[in-house]
Amino acid sequence: MPCLARASRWLTLAGLLVVVAGCGTYMSSVDRVRGHVVSGDLDAALEELEADEGDVLRLFERGLLLSYAGRYQESNASFEAADHLIDELYTKSLSREAAAFITNDATLPYRGYPHEQVQLHLYSALNYLALGDGDAALVECRRVGLRLAQLEDTRDSDSGYLHDGFAEYLAGILYAQDDDGNSAMVSARRALTAFEESHERWGHAIPEQFIHDSIDWAERFGFAEEARELRERFPDEAAHFTPMRRDEGELLVIYESGFVARLVEVRLDLPILKSDQGEGEELGMRVRGRSPRGEYILPEGEKIAYWLSLAMPEMVREPPHLVGARVRSTDGATATTFLVSDVSATARLLFDEGAGKRFLRTIVRALAKYTVHQKAKKESEGLGILANILGSVSERADTRSWAMLPDSIHMARLRLPAGTHRVVLEVLDERNGVAQTATFEEVEITPGFVTLIQHRTYR
Image 1 (cartoon, rainbow, N blue to C red):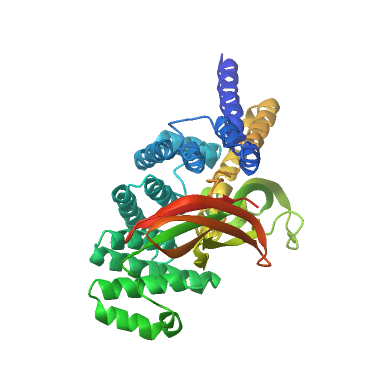
Image 2: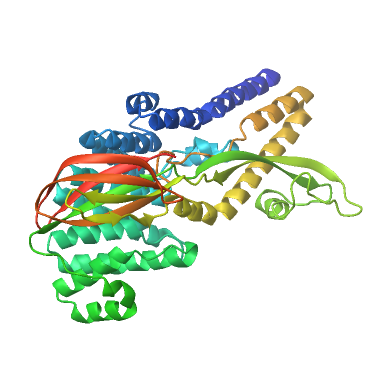
């Protein structure tokens, strides 16, 4: 009977780990989904991503694709469901945490990286703008602020991703349209902080149009001293600023390029030495500082007891070939897009922030599997082999991420007289050549208001 009980226990574990091994099937479908999207077949892409109200990641992906398909209300419903689910998942499930520890992090419910949670509300705001509901778009911008504040409260440091320039800039545009000067200036200050951080980290220029808008809002809403400081701090940009006329409205162009950097699995083997003592995190801290197989130099007199096999996520970025756009209207007005969000760079920043804890957790989990293998081997050689196989099968990197996001987001602002306009968007390559053209017929411009058009390319 004891032998039957042990066999039953191991068979149950085998069944669990076989199921876990199948958890990577979602990410294996990403290439197929991207292929459909690139070919313009959004219906096929949505069919590939079957609806699942209990899966944040699928809700993210479907929400974005529904938005590109012009199904804005369905898109917002998907984003709203994802938002509610994220809040629910902040209440941790101890049983799932325990299961993840003995298998892999991909068994945990996906809550999204912080920048993905912000993007959710950004795209919701853009959906509402496309529907002509500026008030609802403002609500989503406020929710961005709440998400960022929540992130700041839970961080270990006051550095990293604490501000989002695009989100705050868009909020400022909408607040100014709503004549809420105080809120517009608060958003402008936060956006400036974010753009300055982006400049320091990656060398991205602070958008000149943003400086123009900040000066405009400061002067229009009675922040004369702040307007003077902005003019003094950014004299070149200020020299090109002209206030908007009463009979003008603004065309807001959002151009998205490429695909965000994605996560792939890499395998890594680290040595455990015969002289190693301790277990768990103590041993993990020692092992994580060693070079992997093929690079490790064995100290004199030492022997390797075991090669610890790990599966780690690695971020890979493929920069797009189409990098900007030029916008022109039939009355001769032109504008060129400027970068407002380097989505891939932000994803890399957040991914790297968690690298140390993620690596140590993976090592400690692999050590636990090694201990199970050793104990099973003492019971019988067969159980030892089974434990070793199951431990290897269950070792999977968590490569989940919002894969349909763009690599980067660009914006253009074009002032136009009230009325109907024909607008042409020319997509530019690295050499500033026109690689693609999109035409928007009968774009309606209303004095003092923002009209949105969006365009996405994938290569």
